Amino acid sequence: MSTLILFALAAALTFAIRYSGIALFAGDRELSPGWARTLELAGPAAMAAIAANTLLLDNDGFRGFGAWHLMAVAAAAVAIWKRDTNWILLGGAVGFVVFRLLGL
Amino acid sequence: MTDRDSFSLRVPRHLRHQFVQGAKQMLPLSVGGAVFGLAMGALIAASGMPLWAAGIGTVLINAGAAQLALIDLATKGAPWVIILATVAVVQARFALYSASLAHEYTVFPRRWRLALAFLLTDQAAAFEKHFAPRIPDAVRRRWFFLGGASLFAGLAMAGTLVGILVGPVIPLSWQIGFIVPLMFLAIILRTVSDRPGVMAVLVAAVTAVATRDLPYGSNVIVATLAGILVTRLVAPAGWYRGAPTGEETEPREGAP
Image (tube, rainbow over all chains, first blue to last red; front, side, top):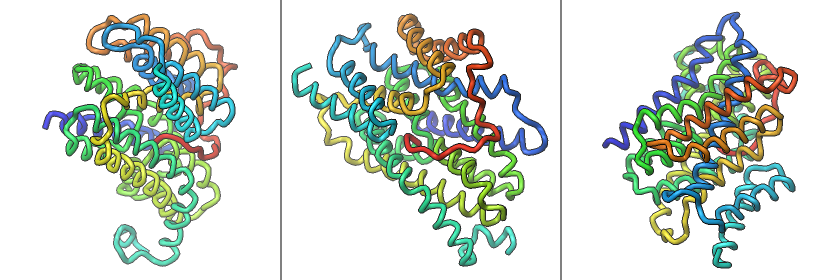
């Protein structure tokens, strides 16, 4: 039940954020450039922090070099070739499986 | 046609047509959302969370990146305040999207604004900004938006629920947790290309590692704030390509 409550709180929060701009800027008010830039940076910064936290660290400190790191390299290589989220996901996942099969 | 009719089954043919047209335009992007959902569902199944609660939560939240952050921190035992603060920061960009759509939505009845706000995703926001000028009639426009946004959200949720059902058969040795960084990397690599964005990513990543010993997984929120603040202080205004408010953008594929 606590998991459901946590999800419900997160859902209420995400909905409030989604509706905030519609409610606040429905009239003639405009979002200031400074706030727009700050909000623009929030997504990349948060996602990078989570990605680094899960990719480079584990419970005991730094994650040992292996399939996880090489998976990220594979995903980046695919991103250079095709700037498409689905291709990047596919390339990273296939890379991870291959590196695991190679014993990394 | 009255507002009372607009959510009933007695929807005129031309509005049903708009709904279908919106869904058709969104279909290619929605396939990506379903794939993302499938992987996330498998991750949820491996996380040890009660599957029924996570399934209901998936429908309630309708936000893939926020849900991934929640799962990651919850499985590490982070306190709720840290989890919710991180979710808020991950979702902060939606305040920008909704502000940029406020002028489009202002002519819609409130229940339509609420429904479309719930269905708002990265893809739906770009989709709606792209098509809004091409559909001047507000009633047709909202049905078009509803068709596109609901298809994307519906397929992403369906993919996640299928992943939750299929996930338990995946062995732990497969280390399915690699999906978390991979999904975030995919979004970053696809969407971040301007200098302030790259700077925010690098500062946040380095800070997350440097502050790894902070308790309760709070290094994520500290790193996020560091990425935003350092970039805002260092990056000159000329580096920004312009916030998406008011500009037309192409819809793009990716995570919900």
